[in-house]
Amino acid sequence: MAAAAPGTLGSLQAGRARLVAACCARLGPGWRLPGSWTSPRMTWARGWVPAAGGAAPQRSYSPEVKTEDELRVRYLEEENRGIVVLGINRAYAKNSFSKNLVKMLSKAVDALKSDKKVRTIIVRSEVPGIFCAANLPVPTIAAIDGLALGGGLELALACDIRVAASSAKMGLVETKLAIIPGGGGTQRLPRAIGMSLAKELIFSARVLDGQEAKAVGLISHVLEQNQEGDAAYRKALDLAREFLPQGPVAMRVAKLAINQGMEVDLVTGLAIEEACYAQTILTKDRLEGLLAFKEKRSPRYKGE
Image 1 (cartoon, rainbow, N blue to C red):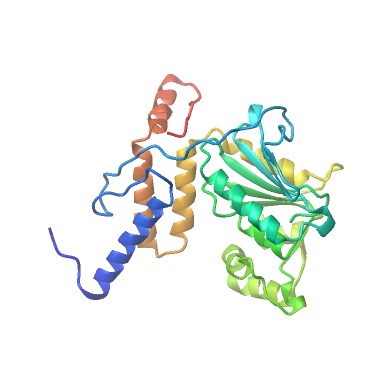
Image 2 (cartoon, rainbow, N blue to C red; image 1 turned 135 degrees about the vertical axis):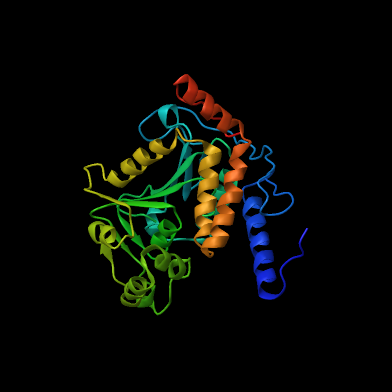
């Protein structure tokens, strides 16, 4: 067995090994990376203890699984099973962030991370016309049907996908108050739309509507607002339904590979992808996918 390369190369390889191992650790309990980080042999074990789900109707929500004054967590049911909606509800403060709201969001995120039944999370406002979790292993969608200024936009930027109504208003406006975005805005906005344009928007405190946000790549979809005022939420729900049939383990691992790979050089990113890919090989879901394809039926994935 050859010794590790000396000097800078050795340090780089060791750093990559630690990074890839850390990425596997972030997948949750039971994920292990034995031996060399380049080894195709990975160990899969069950993890993610399911949390209790809710019950009932279709269109928007099932009965609340958990209700707080400022944050409502709802598990959808029937054809929407696996979709969870985080509803922010601080009407008296126009959904501005409070210590209590941040604490509840953190608590909700911790609970959802360990829930194997959760497949996609939609973040929306329950206050008409106003919007306003990122460290979640499943896809997250921000549905912006109204105002998303300052912390509201920062929350949306922390989501994987953003959709908005054409009448929505978005911006990081903190410089108007002689402060700067402090909830990740200075870091996530440049990653979303590029450094130069992000600087322009933050320096000017400019507010964009849905069409303008789509033009600069801040959101993925823009919709004409409907009479109910929830066009973005409906689109987010459509996207979440598209995600539901896919293998849940693959979805989590794909998100991890993309997120971590974007932060490193290509060689390290490919190593992360290889490690993440290997984690899917020994899963029961992969075997179920192959069997379903052979039998020409829809797969029944269990997240195992």
